[in-house]
Image 1 (cartoon, rainbow, N blue to C red):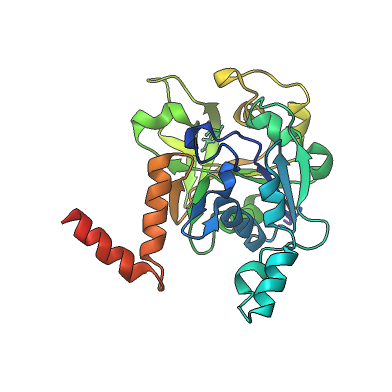
Image 2: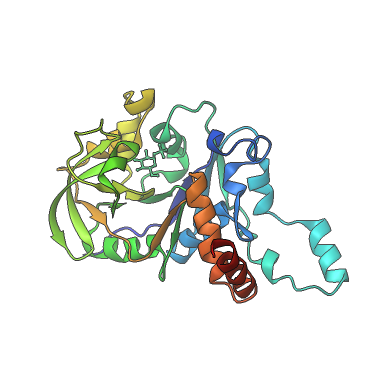
Length: 289
Ligand code: G1P
């Protein structure tokens, strides 16, 4: 069976980033770098690698740096060319004309509301959602692995990773059914279950392949956990009506929405770099000795 390909990738990037203040007072949190690349670029590259060719940012006030990052930078390019510097690190970022597409989420009403703001652009196609503060490192990337699984099972797929049981109240939590390799049947998904009520420790880490019907459900939103319109609640209504699987990523996850996770990502990726790895390793060893 062939399923409609996943061409569109939605990036909810309107969040205020209060957890990273003061860094994010005048700068989008998605522009925080891991070593020398902003979080948003890691996520966009993951989507492009997975075959998505339309990048959709659900953005808001004060997020202009995101738009500029994927645009031409005449001054920079002209100066670098004149100085004979390599353009490799900036040319690849620029997207094809007409992409990304930007839609605005005027009010921070929740992830479900953010995704719904992209409904006119998504139209009647299955689409991906990526949360850029979840940095996924693997080969191939998380979304590509999910697309490969989607090509076999279709329907809806959400990332599924184990977390410590004490952390389940921070995430969307899956009630798992049958397991087949990396795929887990999803029987139920609950947003931020109150402590002691989670049915498993399988959380959903911000990678989704969804059918367009979820937008119809979001047309009539309900207020969920934290007083927000939750994507998880809308997705949950598709279970039983369409195939619905969790996909366990073969790779590493860094929660860069959290300061410790973001520092860990910087350290881990810096240590792997040929250019700076040895210097960082030597310093870290001295520091910890
Ligand atoms: C969001 C989702 C949640 C998911 C999490 C992953 O929560 O609502 O289901 O598990 O991202 O990071 P948030 O971090 O926005 O509270």
